[in-house]
Image 1 (cartoon, rainbow, N blue to C red):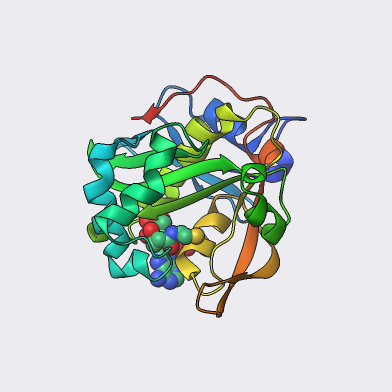
Image 2 (cartoon, protein in one colour):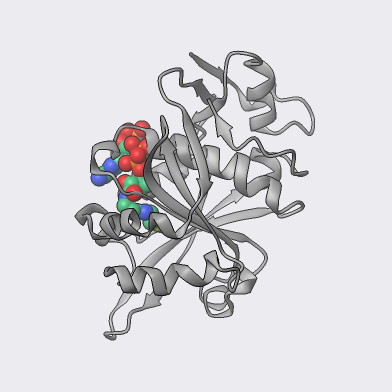
Length: 235
Ligand SMILES: CC(C)(COP(=O)(O)OP(=O)(O)OC[C@H]1O[C@@H](n2cnc3c(N)ncnc32)[C@H](O)[C@@H]1OP(=O)(O)O)[C@@H](O)C(=O)NCCC(=O)NCCS
């Protein structure tokens, strides 16, 4: 089921997500389909049960496999062995790092992972991307069978709306910075209502640099300003 409405049809102060939820009350969780243009397009997915649950150490095997999949490895940090995955993500799971780690699920099966954090908690990154007041996030659909089927767009919406938005009341900006060549990620963010901003270089240990594109979501406009009760599963 799809719904679309023009930006001019929004009530004063009403966010895009609130309008969509109001229009499709009772038919199931409402997912962003394409918020890049006018009209804004949303949908209900009756075929898939989409959820986001906390990562545990028991997920490290899947995470290790996923970061070694070529479609992820191309864009991901160099933490490819089980030891490195545990060393990199373990501190957050033990509460030693405020980053929150999550697993994407489709119909109860783990298909990928994501994380969210206050960019200010990572001073080097804050300096590089110049968004110290924003909330940052990273994501991957690790299972190759689920890539390119629209599920990443839907899961990111569930993640941002149900997990990230309620956790940072008052935050005005969500921010991610894909490599400028990562067309799928850039397109996904555009479809969720993000706008592209500044291009900047991230240095690599080998002396090269990746050119990233900062993408920002206007939280008040798209989600609404106040966080609400989290509904972790959209089914
Ligand atoms: C980026 C990622 C999460 C996208 O998830 P996905 O489920 O494959 O994406 P979707 O199927 O929802 O597609 C989103 C859009 O990107 C487009 N797209 C998908 N793959 C593409 C590609 N290789 N090149 C260009 N566009 C692509 C889709 O066509 C769709 O746009 P459309 O609806 O206008 O056709 C997934 O590809 C992934 O995990 N990649 C590896 C890790 C990564 O890059 N993470 C992000 C780091 S910033």
